[in-house]
Image (cartoon, rainbow, N blue to C red; front, side, top):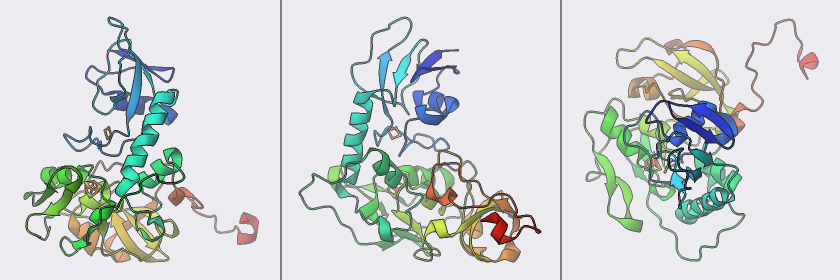
Length: 316
Ligand code: SF4
Ligand code: FES
């Protein structure tokens, strides 16, 4: 098994593992951010360049450093390889540049965007972004489009990561949307304004790292950090029925699939669970959802039940 060192931490990984996945096996600070790679989607990665890292030693056999930074999501490890993520000034500098590029056309509308609080780009900009933009030209703008009954496409916010295209391609029977045109004209679009109504198409909302694809049944209902995420399940004939219900008081405001600590869904859910089951009686509630990612959503959430005899005064 190849032995790889990332930011001074060593791990042995199976042959063919990418640097990003080796870093995820180590966990913590050594894990590069990823805006387009998505472990459950085949072919994803290699588009956004946020996961760039420096390879300071190629391998035991050929210890020369790689001259350019490499995309960690699509570069496999070699035995003896040494990688620098957070410990490389070149990497941090390049990441700053990537964020600046991603934000060239992305509107700074976090205060009104439904993705705020769970947006990968917002987190990335917070960590690596500049305080102001140097861009002086006109930004790309698009009209918002309803793609089907439940999904709103706000193309202006899209970073062209392709995740939704792979999701539609790999999870649904008919693929009717993709990326059309080229270069800075590229846009996510449906085939002649088709509605997307396949059973699993709602998953494009969960995989979108920004607020370009949002759930019309939840849009503008609440800031996500005011809701309480709860693990819940139901008997469903189309999917596993394992989901997260996001509650406001005793009402279910939205339903999503469960995400891991990298914000990735491992078990996709169907449209019926996501859009049509919003009654408490539809679900068996398991308990509060722990949001692993560093996120404002995790703030101020009681994850253990409050003992009945405890008064609120004691708790404060
Ligand atoms: S709409 Fe979202 S998921 Fe689709 S390419 Fe754009 S940013 Fe990625
Ligand atoms: S996550 Fe590697 S290029 Fe986007």
